[in-house]
Amino acid sequence: MIKLERIYKWYKVRGVPSFILNDINLEIEEGDFISVMGPSGSGKSTLLNVIGMLDEPNEGNYHFMGEDVFALKPKKRTDLFQSYMGYVFQSYHLIDELTVYENIETPLIYKKLSRKERKAIVGDMLDRFQIVGKKDLFPAQLSGGQQQVVGIARALAGSPKLLLADEPTGNLNSTQGEEIMELFTELNKEGVTIIQVTHSEKNAEYGERIINLLDGCIQR
Image (cartoon, rainbow, N blue to C red; front, side):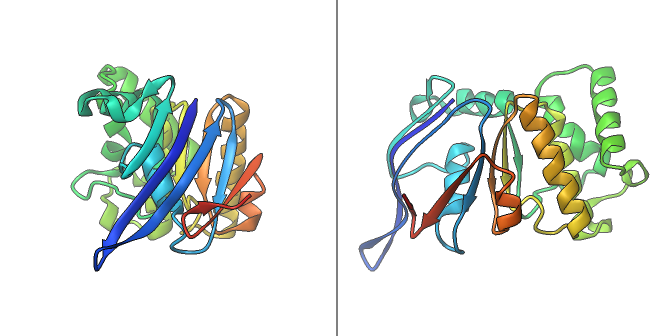
């Protein structure tokens, strides 16, 4: 499903490259559940953004579902993301001007589903995450934990084949966090490939494989 070869990402400090990702080689099969761990600044979120086609490295090759990602035109790359991926952002990335309902509905509009189909899916997400009573509220009216739950619901609304999650339980209480990780386990059993970035060893154990990053390098 995913093949990263010799991925390098750097920025220059006084003309000298400072590496965020350093010679990343990684293969992920369909149906995997991967946990990415490492200290702050080790490159975890950058790696996730490269896989999610939100960032591009300075060097390297990336194949997703057999496609050479960096050779694709921007529109094709966007189509690939919208067709296959759901992304749970650490900082939510909800649209302030849209209600909870409209935020969850947004990825479905890109999929060109009918209004009736969208309504059924959003209704299911609102029920699943017990946020029916919040559907007409705006992000600013929600707590951090509630915004995180809405972000997860939005990521799952499009039935992604690949779920990318950056600290998905970081703003949730322990009970909510366990519920989300159990949900991820269920989704994985149903065939969804999951890559999560986490600081939590407990959450990392839900994955079948743990990838440790340090200074932009995968630790062997």
